[in-house]
Length: 102
Image (cartoon, rainbow, N blue to C red; front, side, top):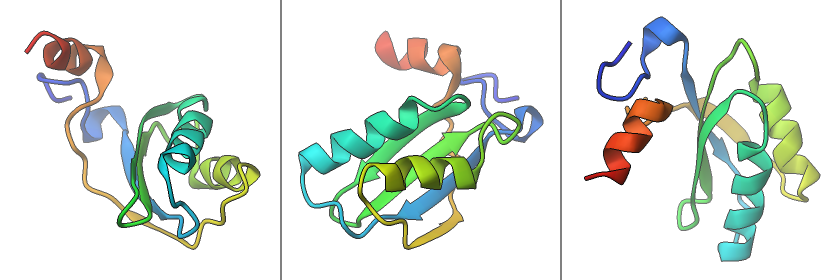
């Protein structure tokens, strides 16, 4: 486990990038982020509007790509594809506290 933020392969955190081409504005961003962050096991959800991508880190023992895809599609957006993402080392309570107090 990463001593700086609590993430890493040892704790099983997975990061995936979902292509969601229908997102156009900040309301779209907030809708998708809220829908995915509300899922059990999702640690982070970050929308990149210009790229039309959502990077989500989650615990695969609690959630799955299928569950996340369904949550996004229930908001009215289509998930075009899902690829592996890069772990950003920003998860866990320790990482959140460290960023908050920087």
